[in-house]
Image 1 (cartoon, rainbow, N blue to C red):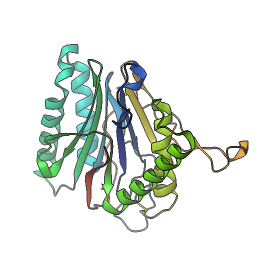
Image 2 (image 1 turned 180 degrees about the vertical axis):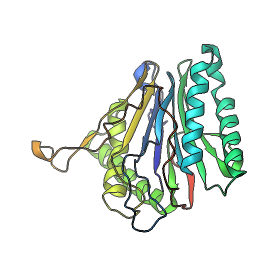
Image 3 (image 1 turned 135 degrees about the horizontal axis):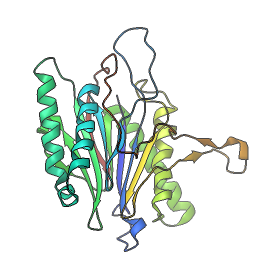
Length: 269
């Protein structure tokens, strides 16, 4: 099952900041598609996260056909909208998720579907979770949020707590810089979820997007167990395709994702 991780920063742990680069949202996703057909290996080039507007990013977990079609529709809808209408993104996202889920459900059994949307509007950051169990009513989130299999979420939560504790011990503070926060979020994603292979349906390079008042950028995170060894650094983030182009098109994979119990869990904040 997909793992999505998102955080508003500066995460409510260190107060607030007026600096534009310190107000925003970070979203991470794995890139593995797992298939129900026996003998078909995972495909580690799935797209689960993308920019849907100049000030918003979205990611999905669950039913691939629903998720891909909903994100494609959302991207197209916001691209056609007048600028002032982008502030109505919450209602637009709810409507598209509900309509897409209903349409596909009328012709086949539909799996689980969750979506995370991060946006910056009028210098304020927003992180929303949309859950099919709640008819995609928007749930405002703070702190760090994970969407995935319950066991995977626990592994990520444990790893993140250790990373934060180690950071506080060594630096005596939590860094405000969202680039550093992105690294802190990526470490347990890679080390405690992907590398442990506890959930074979989560894997591949990590997709990452950051939205701030200055727009959207795609960070790359390099990790190492020995900072003094130049050869040990590893880029754990996906390089292709361009998740910020707003030209992404819906493309249905050949087989459906393996269904897994999942949920939207706030773990910090």
